Length: 203
Ligand code: GAR
Image 1: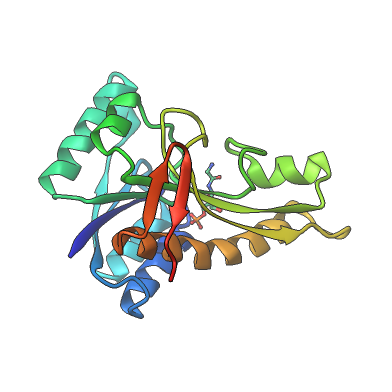
Image 2: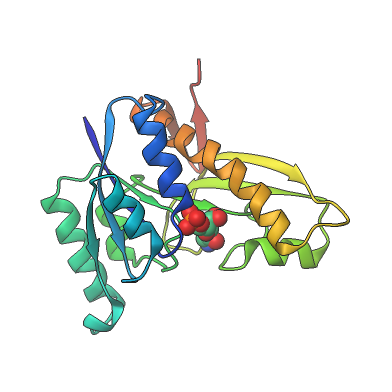
């Protein structure tokens, strides 16, 4: 059984989608062992608690540097024997120390078609730029901001009447399908990395 740690700073709708997918047997051979947050009022914490998942809060203010923070997080993940780290709206950049501790075992979801519109405002930036197609990306995390190897992407059209909120809602619908699928592929050993290309064996 692979042990997953989900990291979230906010609402946790992707966390919920992952929990539901595990329950529905869509991610076989894995469990969400812990949910980690950097915010003590993240609604994601409630969702985890409602599903009897252990929660752990690491507050940035309790650490003197980003690396100290990540050293504590990594020590915790090792103690919990975590196999895969899943960032789901975790709004902190990981240090090289963290990334090196879990090589190709950290995933992130981002609300744009990377490499377009990385960063904290992917939906608003795509809308303001005027693209006609956007979407979401699941990728492995490297030391950059949203720059790691792309695992899965899905696109959708941008409409004239879209607002940031309407576009975000449609993107999140895609995310809730795409993220569990990417995790299931990883658990089944179906993602092969060749350079920065993820070759998916989805037979
Ligand atoms: C998701 O839409 C995710 O793509 C985005 O945060 C949202 C979290 O929603 N992540 C980023 O923008 C990362 N740069 P959730 O808390 O409801 O899952």
